[in-house]
Image (cartoon, rainbow, N blue to C red; front, side, top):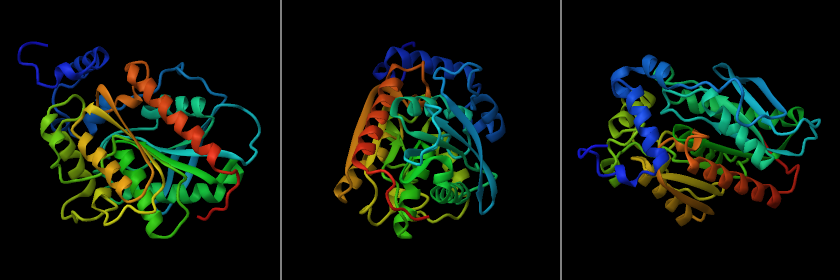
Length: 330
């Protein structure tokens, strides 16, 4: 970088600086200027022909929802016959509600399944602007309810279902927990939120401090948010912006991961603080030297492996504290 480098540049570690240069070279213009179709073509990734983490079982699923079927992918680290006692993490990919695919989170889901022993089910929810709020959330709610009903057929313990996601997926995971709490439905055993997008006000200091950060700038985040919620949305709708909830009490325990150089950082950390104040057990880790999106970049960021190891340890600990075959409801 030259003398015009932004003030946050020296906060990035070597891996992140190299990745930032690659992103800057790959994007001819900001995401908001490319439009959804071109941004997807440039940024949506497909898994390599030979995965970094091979698994015994990766299965394509079709999941019914109120709007029609969506695709999902099931990951299992061993090929043993289903026994009904396996915990499962439902994973929701990131991408600002506009981008993102099953392929983009494939390596992450493989790594979590291999490292935790949990089955992972990744959902291909509908994207904005073609399908604005609440389409993506409805897909996730319906898929989660379907999984609780069909768990035995998939060899899953319906009483040990967790929810997780990164960025927009973190928003959807948090919103799913709020919706099921409000509806008095059975809750996930834990929520794993990687730099979740939990507010639509863009007022915390990191939105200014890292306004031009790599991959996700403040202006691009606003563009994605406007596509998601559409015109005339209510700013206090807590199922769109979980931070707007009057209370976070009685939600599942949470693991929250953030990146140091990320405009979304302060919102995510404030959400973790609110969870803790409202009596929800929370573990929060800020990963230094990296920017938004690092968790899915396996083989690119050293910190990605550390974050995945933390997620896997968290899930193993949750599995140990929950007896198999707990009672559940759809």
